[in-house]
Length: 464
Image (cartoon, rainbow, N blue to C red; front, side):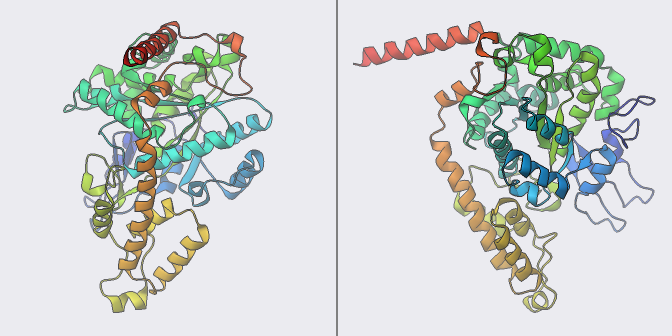
């Protein structure tokens, strides 16, 4: 992240670390290191040319983040009064930057906000996308804080040679409906799509932060962090400043107020997958230079592909993915073909047992099954050979079918009108923030909202 000679952002993080350092090939041509960047995720290849699972411990060491250990989980529960989410209990939320500081501030009654996002690349999200949002909702409920969700439809357009701007904007609107159906509180949640908010009429303060961040960032630093070269377009170089701007409360005066000194001190906690870390490592470097608080980060692992633990689910590969729009029959078929950790024959399986570490149906149960005791029973039975791989797949299928069915029911009530309210720049409801008289309303948004309400009233009168 840091340029050679710069002081690294985190203790133990080597100066000059780049996202591309994970793509370096070993001397043995068959062996390759894992690749973890915002644009490419895959496990490594061993000396025999066999794909291996993603090594998250290696990522912690390379990126210079901190492990989330039992002591931190115990403190989280003590401070919030909430049992850690199953992703935290099972090590799927595994790494952080300054989560301890956020807990310190929360304990003292100092306010903060949450920020997460989604790069929309298809009409429907998959279960690998829903899990981080489910975890974010848990954090919002546990801390009772405002949440900002950024839909980076502009980034998808910048980086893709195939997608049109119209497609990316449509994906953002469709994904917003999926995200809302996770169950977020509209009174505490603001969702925006970059192409509408930043380049429209309500993002002036946001644009000012982009300019400040962009002025501090050089092309060489972007090349070092993201592995870009002269063939990347200029908007790809500019996007890190855009993604960083959401980390700061001053980008949203209609939420956090106009008192510059007070707003500059409001910290942010970002739950995200580990591949997004390069954006925020760089953002954390520049924040103090702008008189702003470094955002804290909490990292999640990837939900593995149906093909195996060496890659993550991808919306561009439907056969590797369980979509939130899939039917029960499609889910059953996909999990039936998932990579299994069972032995080649039933007799061998009874002797040696299944390998839960690589068995994808069991991995999915680990992500979605809430009952810790039941999960442990399944693990023991499979590893002892008492449960066959077919039964494991059947158990995982039922769990995923129930999860997606519950989502489908919530999605039915998530209308475009509900989405419009989530995406309307407005004052959010929260405690401990600047009082309402300090807020700066978005005039154009309020006028448009009143026009919409008036149009509805007229339409109702005409109908009667």
